[in-house]
Length: 370
Image (cartoon, rainbow, N blue to C red; front, side, top):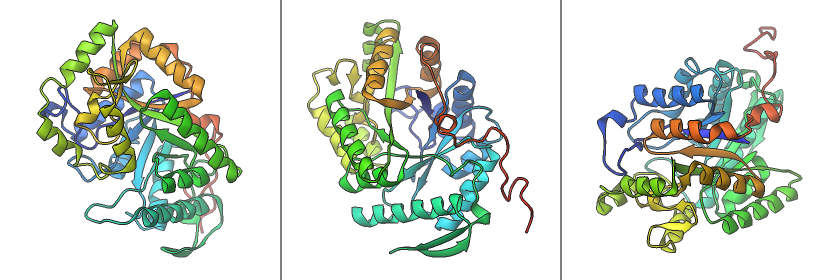
């Protein structure tokens, strides 16, 4: 499996959920420390999110991070339509070469800041952007005629370091989202739900992918609270939300551009059906969703319980994990000490043959200059 962590580029790291702490602000220094720590601890992947919030621009931060990381792959979020596709392809090619193949892409289809589009339009734009990127990475020419983009260019400026380009990770549960992933993406990232609902989603996406003669991998984006005992972990969960002002929680939650998406609404519905302690099933606690858009639940328990829950997900067919916890650095250290050594880990880009073992021949390496 591939074990990833999360880097707070979007003003969301806390000791007490919803209570700002200047030491945990999304500064370059703090975000860099999160990433360096994850790299040193042996995580294979780290999600660099994108949102119109105080913090770090994703692509700018990823470029800087290419110079101070050694092993970890950067799962870099891009919001489709934000950058003209050929120039986005060139930016990603530059990053892929700077990182020598340690680049994955997280496709986002939510609205651009200050704009509102219907779902079908947003996902059609995403489909066109992905096809332009993939043509640039794999063909001599970008030759594309779509509803939103008509691009006819030589592809030399956008050739990737990785064979076939970086892997595409994607999350979203609407009908349009599922179709986009089934047709074009490599890893479907889910948010935490009950195991039966996760399994249902996986069956649906697998069936859709087969319609395109494709097979996709599955991932889970979820928080962690790992302690020596289950009682200690539950105490830590209660402490995390002990200072939360519910009115401020709503304001924080809706800062995110995806806070009204189908996926977030589904997370909210699950929390309404939780028990009095906000558990939606054993060891899955939904309290984080009170003040966070997107991924709203955590695996809460002893190291053994957390390990067993991860194994249960693996048995379902989930192979990629993006974990996080509060505060991000401290929880990454706890998990790396108590659970990570028990897991057999790989990097998807290596397993799937994307990252070459030696520098490829591209216009940015050893190909003849034109």
